Image (cartoon, rainbow, N blue to C red; front, side, top):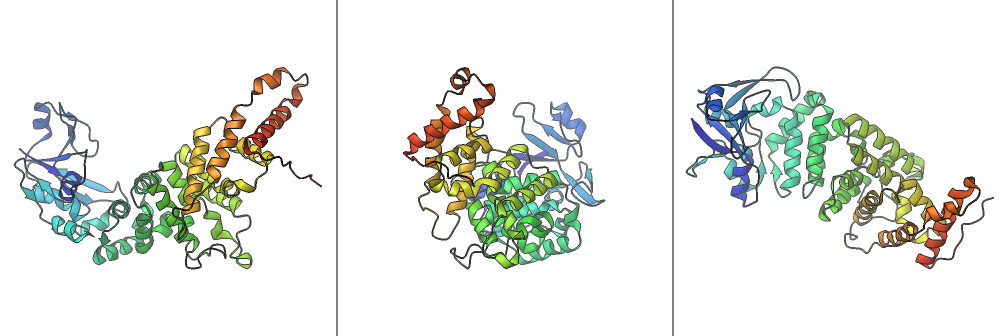
Length: 412
């Protein structure tokens, strides 16, 4: 029995990056031998075991054979005679197909160390084309290692996988899982760029693909279309360390601009409601978690109001709080402000431009939170008037907090 550290731990060690997950491959062993040493089995598709003390994962060396479409269309083979090189050969990228022995010897049969030094993402072999998830994984690594390029032959292989329809067999949960991981990286725009370059973005996220080529407002830089703006927005969210719901909201906030009628471009009148419909469509298809979906819907619908906070009258601000459920969900409202901040600064030359809307709205929200709704309700003899009285008290509090005496204009 021989044990090797493999994959990301070896890669990150060579890059001088921290890595807290260590995976091991065991060569020359059987499941029975692992059980005899106290390892606990956890793998359903192939033998993976947890170390009895460290709880780290140890997998028996294995080979795999394509037996169907998609991520689950594989047959695995494990046996004591499967070699380390055979196990490494089934991995996705050369930089992930290295191993280290107990005494520190690097095992690198596919040139992963050279590709690390050259900053290249390259597939290990033709088996890459058998698993469409590898397109998503490569795009995710491009977001992590933003200065790495994709090898031309690997990009060609990915395009072939898209054209053959293999990518269409990806299940929604796995697409979301990899998308979420990519959005969490340092430069998520690289993930979208790579998916777009190989054609996968149009298949997996057509709502995002449709943004490219759609002009922004006339007063923005003409060379920045809505797609490029979206890439800048998600990078701004990453730059500020915002969490996943904010980053997903940043990705989807402008989807409706792709449906703007051509005769009104570059204006995008009414794009918020179109964006909401497309976010709902995308979230349902990918089974996006509720926290990400709900924040994305709020951002799509209300980011324009947040940007105009300096011009909003006190009553309109209170209505914004009520519609966004800011009083019951103040942390989510702060996430909305974070997504809007990313949107505002996601333009050329605006990366560090002051953005006053969040502070103005948070000042107003604090004033509204201080209003004692229970006291107002007790003092109101007509229960039907309670919501209106509380609303009026909140408006008065915002007027005072913002030193803004304006009333709402009369409705005719």
